[in-house]
Length: 355
Ligand code: IPM
Ligand code: MG
Image (cartoon, rainbow, N blue to C red; front, side, top):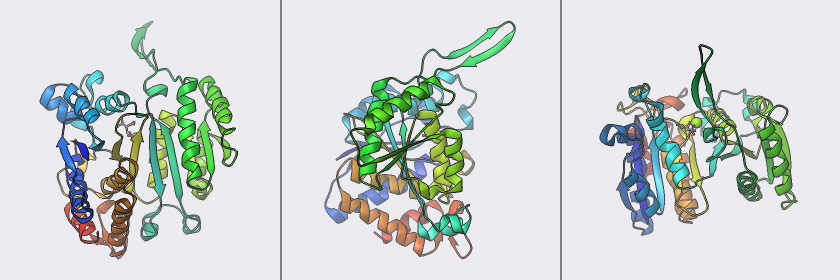
């Protein structure tokens, strides 16, 4: 199994290192060989090659069976020409591989109940949400876009556009995903204001007819943002466009205690998927051995499950993470009363001991 590895920027390299250590031990334990190749993306690629997504990175990803990504971006590249910002690398590789579906599960580890920001009576009802975010369309990629100047005023604009086929295929993924869960899909849009959302809603309703066993509801994005903190237990699968999904998945993740815990999978029809933590590059703690490697380690579990159909191996990792949390070890982002503060490396090593 060939895995293309893109550590990226900030805490990317340190969390990816822990993830790969876990993967290697899984390989030894279960008798698999994982071949890894490291390539450049984001700021690291800009520094070395002048662009955030070198051609050889795209080629290497296409030739692999799965891709592991750390994180991209940082203040060092904030003032660079926007067309070659580190984030362009990430958007570019998603697009190049046709990874239109971003699966972002947000569930609460019982061990982290005390790290959760919500009231105990809300937490008690549980949090297990899967955000299915459209990833290669919408306002992130819509044309026309740009910046200009008119009547002495600067302006900027983007286009939020969705084609029927783009909506149809992401809706299908959401309904299929719901079938393996609690059979509920909530489609999130802004159909009271946006034309693009009215088309979105109509197509989702059309697709839902093929899934009579799955319940479909709709929420406007502002209401959805509120409901997520008011009572997250009402959600099973949330399906939404690129921008709304970006925002809601951060929100869904942090109510579980920390954005440092959550993995994600980006998948498409043909090419290998990208597996990555949903958090960013956290430049403020980069290189200090403070980052939480668990989201990356759990992304490895998602990779084993989705890319390689290795369910047992994935469960082994997830159980080891739970056991590590039960033993009280905590990185700074999930620290609670009675927890033992550890660094990125020690957390990774503890997971390996518990595999
Ligand atoms: C994410 C990130 C990216 C996005 C950025 C870094 C381009 O926020 O994966 O959620 O907006 O998709
Ligand atoms: Mg985001």
